[in-house]
Length: 155
Length: 155
Image (cartoon, rainbow over all chains, first blue to last red; front, side, top):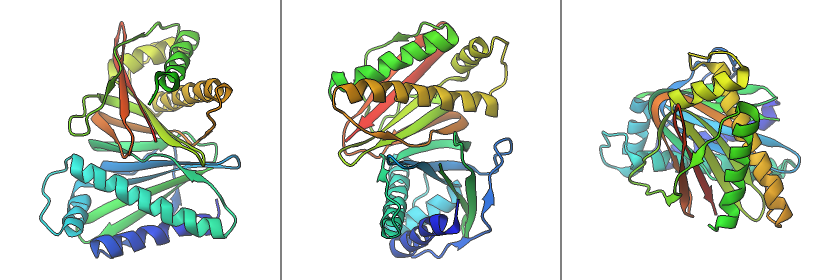
């Protein structure tokens, strides 16, 4: 998987968080995820599938509770203290916007795919894996309140 | 969402479990999922996105630990007692085969879509929600060892 394929997702994510939540996230070093050693534990995730006749992929954004409560509070301009279905819905919206932004950027480079319906997972310390024949890239992000992870897989 | 759209997924699921795990699952009554009241808690889920220019959807199969350990034991012909990454991988494979089977059946009826990469979630008592503008249908299944749930959403 090339950087020119991954970067549009990261650019879109930073833009969404900056625009919607006035939050500047800092991306860590991307690495390949080892199937046997899942590192990204989180409390709420947004997952979206991407598919076309030429390619298929999936993206997951996994937030720790501290990180998403801070982002949700900033997005809604009120203190959000409980990870409920409203927060999960917001995670789905963020996931959708990130992939929508990346889809637009990638379509300009000739990569075309359609987006599936985002799915959200709520559960303390869950771990995401991908059933991919290709590599899975994981990128850690930090904001002041905590951390979150983006995992991208494409075949 | 019409029954003619849901049934191919259920038929494919029953066939996969019967062929691969010699397990006869019994489907309960499908119902519409209320966003505020997620009912299907599980310990491992397989999630897959479906997309085309005409439609988009997602499917999640959420297994309780007891149910998937029994299915995994039958699929591998050995006693599986721990929910590990191998079991998660198998859940991804089941999810893929169910949607692959449904895609084939639906394509004969003129519904076309492509499959994304399956994603798996591991975590005690997690809950799945869908960011769908359309209805989400949930179908409970029972096998002797426990229960599992299928959730389908299409727009």
